[in-house]
Length: 98
Image (cartoon, rainbow, N blue to C red; front, side):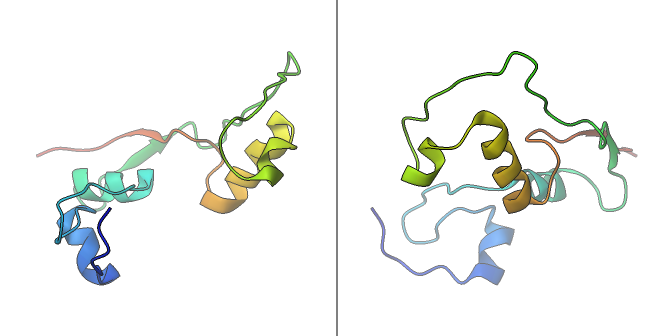
């Protein structure tokens, strides 16, 4: 485990790779899109699609906080949507290449 400090404004251009140890750290889907798609060419699709739970999915979360373990599937979806600001986990879309 690296304890080197990475200054956030310099971290993104390095694609979330630690300058001290070379570890690849988590990157949001929005950051990944910004890095791989030309500016102003991203055309999102299915932005109004949302997850539903028609079979009343019952899962026990083995990892994460105690609070998450007690939440239903739909409650966890809601909390992730609040955290990310996105309606879904996956972002789909097209870009325009020249």
